Image (cartoon, rainbow, N blue to C red; front, side, top):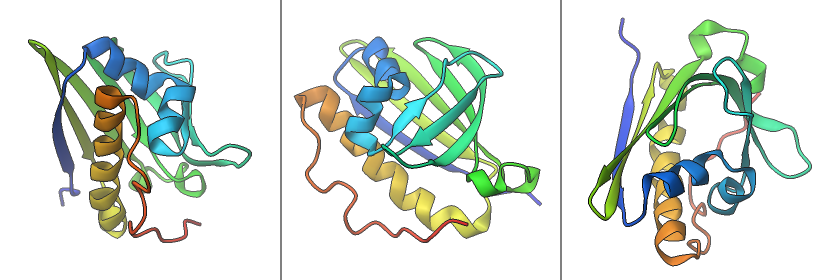
Length: 152
């Protein structure tokens, strides 16, 4: 049986390098995502999705790095990272199109139980990223109203 996938495409008036930096820079990612993406961004390295002063809520491995065009990560809740059936994969594909960038986020190998979180989370995150890169500001309360269930 094939596991579900989720693909989101957005267009951002910016450069591929600025999108890359927004995804991989701890301080910048924390501005639009409420968490910092933490890694050295080398293939085989770990990455973590961390709130300030709290344990990571997502972890994984850096699977592919081609700055500033493509980044692929494994993706799991810390308590499930040891279970291959619970580990999914996220690819960020960054394509320059003149004065804008097409950012395609493909989240594959999903578990049916987290589809709602994924389908509500990615639009909020990527809209906030787009707004930050185009205006320098984030969306007030970008994540309010998003379904969040406790992870264990």
